Image 1 (spheres, rainbow, N blue to C red):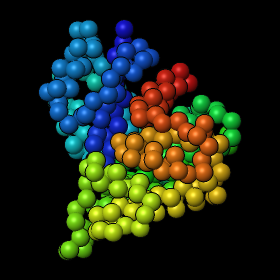
Image 2: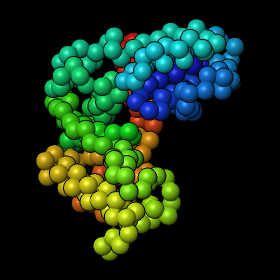
Image 3: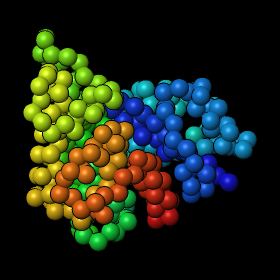
Length: 256
């Protein structure tokens, strides 16, 4: 059975997906080459050639160094080599050439899935991107600070605390309905107001029928969705959506 890796070289945490045949079997960080080599060896069945599809919006030198450190011959296909300015594998793209590979691929996969009515893909990581897809193609989107990026902006104040979104006790304060009564909850409360405003805007401006939520910080947004006016049945939380999308892109590119 053939092994394919999908590489998402993002702004902060590059990671890969490992596909056996057409099934995603595992995802892993792309930071530790030694561990990744062991992982690939366990999947490759002594085959030293691995096919790869690569989305690159991060550090290219870092990416090339990591690829060269793998003990395999990598047959690489880069998204940047197959994209066009106004279309992508048959999907019309109403966006400039500054569009990131990851957003392009995820929009394509949402378009390929052909769900009824407009779809938005919300990718929550270092930044939160909101992309709008209809049967007409990829119509555009928005970029907002990711939750931790938003919180980190308060570090510019000398007397303000550094807040880590992963701290469970502070996460619990995020859902508190009363007016904040200390600095930590005041900052986290502002994050809640920020997200509620974003969701209200999305609902009124885009009126999506389906929402696909993905990205490394996606779970931190789920409480806001539960309190928002989005229909619960329209929400699809898919942590590995970028890897599913990249694999579909590779299949369609090879079969065109």
